[in-house]
Amino acid sequence: MGRALCSALARRGHRVRALARAGSESRVPANCDVVTGDALQAATFHTAVAGCDTLVHLVGVAHPSPAKAAQFETIDLASVRAAVQAASGAKVRHFVYVSVAQPAPMMHAYQAARAKGEQSVQTAGFECVQILRPWYVLGPGHWWPVALIPIYQVMEWIPATRERARRLGLVWHSEMVAALLACAENAQPGIQVLGVPEIRAAGEVSKRRLS
Image (tube, helix red, strand yellow):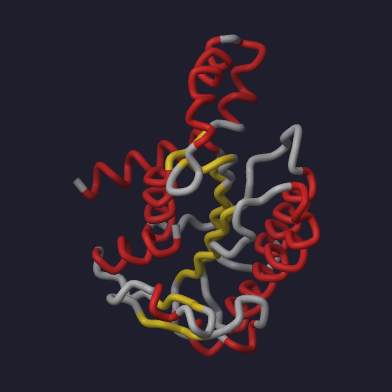
C-alpha cells in the first residue's frame, strides 16, 4: 500500500517523503523523496519529518499470523511509537494510522498491539488523527479470502450477523489506498476512526474525485 499511496499523492501534487530501509531505496517511487532510516528508531528519520503536515504510518509485519505475536510488539507497536515520537517532536498536525478491526474472534495478539498503537497516537496531542481499521485487505499476495465473499454476503443479509460481517469485512487494496489518500488530503480535527464500511465509503469518494 505504501508505494501505491506515495505514487497517488505525488500525482496529486503533494511532496512525499518516504522512509525506506538502507538498501531498499530503489523501491520508493521515483517521484518521491527518499528518507533512509530505521522505522524502529525515531532518531534516524525525525529530521526528515520536520515541515511535514501529515505522517502516514504503514509499517507492520508481513502476513500477520498468531505465530508472529512477538513481532507485533517489536515491529508493529515499536514502529508506531517511533513515528509518534518523531511526528510529535516535529509538530506534525495530522497522523494517519492503519490499525485493525476489533473486536475479532482471532489474532488477539495482533489486535492488542494495534490497540496499544492507537492509544499512542490518540494521546500524543495531534490536532488531527485518523485511524483506519480494516480486517483483511485483498490484493497482490492476498487473494485466498476472495472465496469467502459469498459467505460474507449471506452474513450481511442475516440481522444477527450483519454487524459482525460488516466490521470484519474484506477490503480491496484499491479501496484501502483510495481511503488513505482521502484521509491524507482531508484532515479532520479530533480523532476519527474508520471501520470497514467507512473505509469503503471514503475510498469510493476518493476514486470519484480522481476519475
